[in-house]
Image (cartoon, rainbow over all chains, first blue to last red; front, top):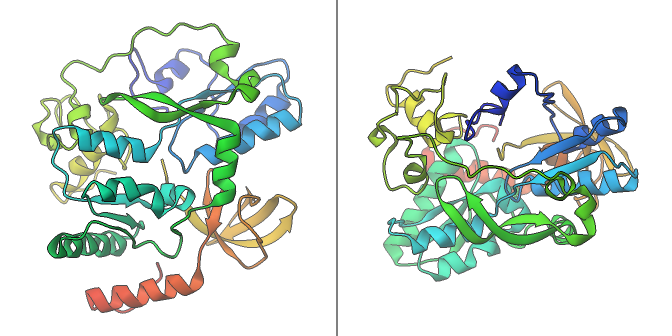
Length: 272
Length: 76
């Protein structure tokens, strides 16, 4: 997260300029930090999909239980199924979806039913290389047979109904809202904001900050890469001004980004 | 972002458990997993057990991998 380029700078660069940035393993660690530093305001940057949102919800409930008045969350959580539906509305051609395993642990395979009903096979997939191969095989079999169903490959972790306790927690703490996605624009009902009951923990309401309009770096085509409209090397910055060592766009930052994966593995060489 | 690892529950104290894997020990919230008990394998993400791993399904997956890819079963 700290290396992701922002409109003006990354959090890493902000830290170099003196911003007090604490990197934590769990949102709960940020609650502990707030308890330890009662004189300071601790803002947790709540990012991630349905996998991560329950951990942030637990942290908010914990801060509430302890009566902490110096803990808040900048809530930027995103939801996967609405983004998939938005992709189907775009001009991008998608034959089927490898659905994310750990998001699905929470929301369950059934969450993709609307996508399958739109004629796109969905396979919920685990994280071993063999899982991905098995899922591609399952997708191909669906396409061959003219089926469009939700199938689970990652059965050791994912159930059709997901984790009901986690879903209940999400409903308690968050409300579904329109959300802005980098490179994709605003997608209706594709994110979370804090429920009214937890407004006291909402950093956006606690601090009056009016952020400037965000913009992507000139020439960066992460949005097109994210939508599958182009391959990473088709971006003019790829491998020249944008590399894993000095990423310009968000897709080059982590090993999970399409551009970094392409950069690392296209030649068989792995940058260390 | 959605990286999560399987870890084994070794102690439980209310909503908090000690979990370990490969010599790494951590504390994690386990109150999102129904009926958690010592010895369970759970998937840990950002300090929270998001669910339990099903050992029978894991065995079955390994068997399917072996069948599909003609490989000896390995740990998944």
